[in-house]
Length: 154
Image 1 (cartoon, one colour):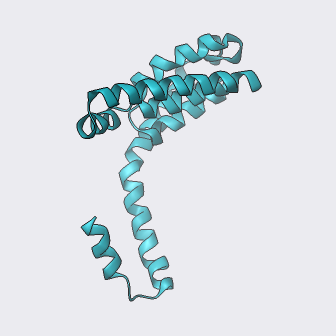
Image 2: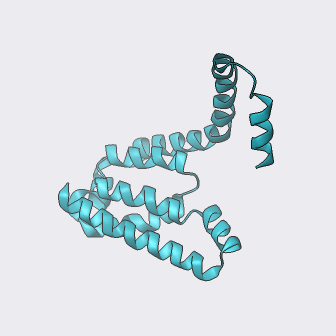
């Protein structure tokens, strides 16, 4: 928090245009360097899916015709694959392009974030074991419920 206050004080007297044109590109570059590696991993795996997994396979396991079974199939996949949301969104988008249903993509992106190891460790260390279990179960159950509703209306 002190770091943010120092940064605000440092730029407080400068004109708005200078802050916009000098500091916004600098911070955009920092953010791009932070998440760029995860996006590249997501692009790599998305390209891998497109090149080596037939679209018929994706439709067969994760397509709309499979209904609720496709949602249940997506649960363990999203838990295992989720490393960083930025890269995983690219993979989920590629699965959608290849024929996965919208509800499956929803489950993969939402459950992946809920079961992210770093997020669970933060909840575990700050709040405790029971809260972590409640966080994971509540997030997963509500996501599956929302995906089922989405499946019914799409």
